[in-house]
Length: 249
Length: 254
Image 1 (cartoon, rainbow over the protein chains, first blue to last red):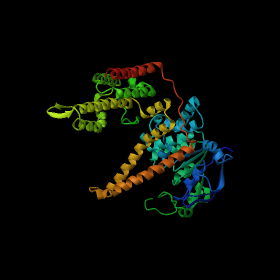
Image 2 (image 1 turned 120 degrees about the horizontal axis):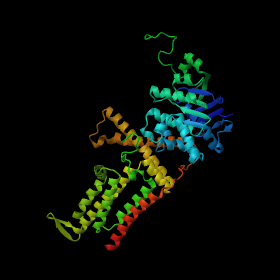
Image 3 (image 1 turned 180 degrees about the vertical axis):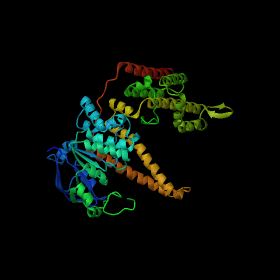
């Protein structure tokens, strides 16, 4: 059961009445890695914010590891679901990285040695010992992204939800992040526009468009379905589509 | 600013003062500033004594006098104002360099000058020897209300970010030919201030969401307190007693 996500008929509208989620059904097995793709404004981030109760659905239900995402279970759900936000400056708000990594476990009531062990273990996963005592605004983009990941790993989550994890990273930092994520055993939902990333990390991809799931396929199949990609404003990097001639190839 | 350090006020050194527990330094600094503030202005000897002790501390902290002097420029606006007092104040007058000035005003100037410079020197020494995260930790160990500490923490964390954002907006304006010369051209500045406020507000909401996502329930978790060792207690006590004692003697004597 641990790490299983079950989303049924979830609907959500912004206060101005615009409907962002229009009946989303999605079941994800324990340990599965799923890419969530689709155009801007398709509802991907909104769905992510539902997974640990930051937003509450206006209809439908969500359970994580069998626990309903509802106010009485927020504490438990927020321990189980680690959300890594797109902008690392939103994620890292404490004076030093170490204090930020400790923030979650401290909210769970950990102190002293147990806390230190959690923090060190999380920093170790992201190779973050060398920047642990630095303030977040003195880190490079890649270091900040790894630090942001450590802040949720220290809660020992069963599910990781990553919103655009590779945006703004240089290629080497992107590579390091992918290798780190590929080694993590928990269920992962990766919101991204980076199709090669989806292919490398996630055997399964779902596409969200207009607040609905419009496709749920293997990532390999998706990348061959150029029509489906085009319908959802997705595009293979130039030169990757071998079905047409490219002057440079 | 060194890559590993959090703010421009900090001077990286390995002195006794740098190693002191932040809560001890906070108590000492507060004690010193209060003593300076309550010392009567006529007790010139007391201010000389404070200055000597502060100079000694600066030496022990291995802070260059030049650094202290440059940072002291921050009090310049107050000092400039103080320079006008002898010309404005009334009462008994005297002649200085052939100019008639008020005696009471001269004392007023001296009072502001001495207290502002000495008080500011103490805070400059504190921030030059203590990194900001440590100052915040020290405040929380001293049981400063959690709300105050949270506000300070966030202010320090995001001030730089907001300044960056403002810088980027200015670059974006300049890049499109904005070069204000007249007050009528100030409109874009006003609207960018508004935009900055909205952006900061929205950032606040996103940060709050990120905090909730990690189990925040409305109260900042506090690090467990560590005991400070006795030799530091003694050092702090000595400094505070020295300053407070001087202030009291000065109060009684004048």
